[in-house]
Image (tube, rainbow, N blue to C red; front, side, top):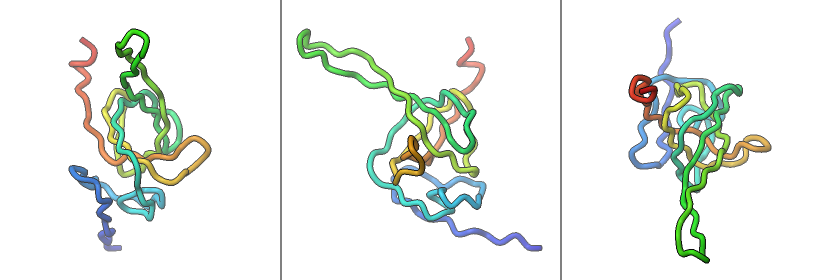
Length: 122
């Protein structure tokens, strides 16, 4: 059987290239029919234990009005991981909002910048 090339969609986000691998996931923005809209977030992957789902952490600053200073805060969110994208703990991911896919998942991973293990451990 000859392997046919699957059509890759342009999701309309600048500086995001489609992955090399293909998949049959209907919730993949590149190979399925999931439309993305809303915020584009970046975060660090903290867990990949769930099936087709990752936990990523975003860091942000919050203003304390009384002291006119900022404090560092973080939040953990869930995102759908298509099978065509490879992710490990510690990688920096670009995540885009989409329609709700489950009770807690309303975003999907579109890009990954891998981190070097040797630099992280030292």
